Image (tube, rainbow, N blue to C red; front, side):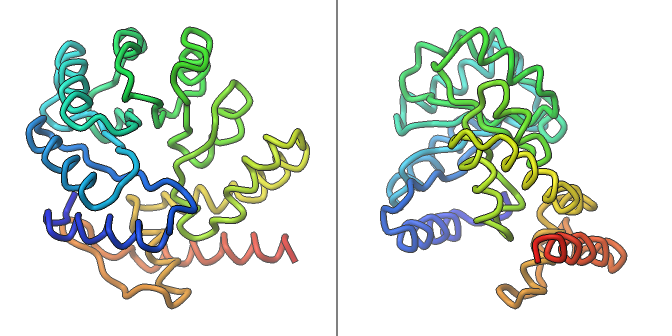
Length: 245
């Protein structure tokens, strides 16, 4: 959201180049404006993205009719496989289940990143729409519960730091190893919590900086996490790695 359009295109191109078609690349393109969202979606497509992630327009709080019209317009203009992203705590608006049902006829919309913090919502989507939409947890701490009600995976914060371990929870579940998935998920739980000791992405960037992969830099209005917060992240990682040893 703080990237310029040129930076947005560079990030997508860089990820596409590194992925080398081993996995699909889904680019976030949601904004408060439908026309600007379409423009970012076009930039993402032209940079090589395989799909789009569209957050509900934030701050202006559109009605449910407005949300439906917004997503239809973007999907029509740039019909890449699209995941919707429902996170009311950040956007100020909740994409209602009834609105999602109305969007079921839009072929390009293939799933939803569900970040209401309520597993019941994921369960309701699966119960009412079956396999029409893939439901992905938008909360690391709820990955296993969402899988248990029919979800397909997670769009993760922790995976930026621990990609194998985070994806292993889903792999173990899909392989039928419920006990193994549960054990790993519970071992990761304190790390998941630490990733939100301050506003994301501050804590995870601090952990990645500790590992020497990035510089200690944030863009305003976010600032670098306070040292007590960073200490909590470090402690959670130490405990996780100690438990793994």
